[in-house]
Image (cartoon, rainbow, N blue to C red):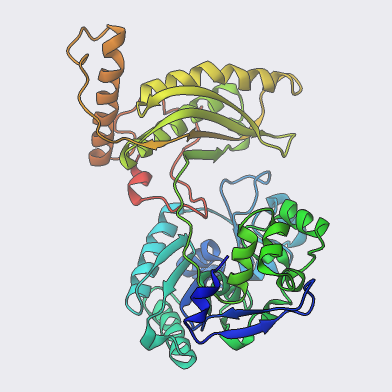
Length: 453
């Protein structure tokens, strides 16, 4: 919560809240337009329509693999008119729209287009944060934060993307006093929208939104707020900041109260806690051995990223989804603090039989539609020094991990220089294994080097 002394020093705005247990006023500081948030519309599908002119104006679904049992990872706006969205099963999309065109995902191209779009935005305004593969936030300077200047800037960005990247790559832009509100504003008008939330419009302009439109409020939090009498944004705003925090269940509620009024707060620092990959398996590759080989490949990719970022991990998690179950199955094993591929693969071998046993309990066989490997409890490698055991006999247990870590790093260098799978551990070819390339989680953008691992 803000100390009152902060507001006494500025020409603020008094707001009264008659629905509080006692009438009182809160003094808020001036809230100029500070953030521009750009959200690319149906990004993956739009890239495909840009690259394939015959898809323009048609319902398009982007899928991870060519199977009706998988789900859409993107849908064009023409497809969304039929109720087809991210997460819609392909078989269901085909029932809803006979003319739906299913195209396979091309993640490397999406990253390449993302990089070009970020470069274009930089031509107009500094990029403060890349929030995801299709979202970017920019903090406005004092000479560009009046409404007219901010709108003109947004239109220049839109025009620049259309002219220099592609006319299919439209975006919705929100402009507001803080990043949360700018994100909400970008969602208010789609596709190709532009919404500005000024100080005098807050918070009443938000009352038509749902609580779940706010990042961080899901089904469980929505139910918790309802139990406390908060059923919409107006209910949350009507409380004192401290009471809003109590409904939320901690200090974030009063932060949210101020953010919804347009106050810009210092952001809480975040830290990466996991590194991992998952893969949707094609129908013919969902048996025991293809799953095992795919899991090994995912573990190698995660270990390579771990080393590149300078982390080590203390926990390996194996997870997946069976064909007959929507819930995630998972198991884990402790690791010594490591970034060694061979240690990680050895640990994976110890827990994979648990997955096989779980598969046998389901109609006598393993039928897994998705498998993933995550390295958790990661920490920075600081002050790493050479091992005292490096010169022992290679078969000596004390020397083994030192040698295998050096070998893991050598493989990284060879693959970076000569391309994907120039050297690896164990079988990666043949009909048993799905091709495992870099994939895009919307919150994480792969480096282009990952497409060559």
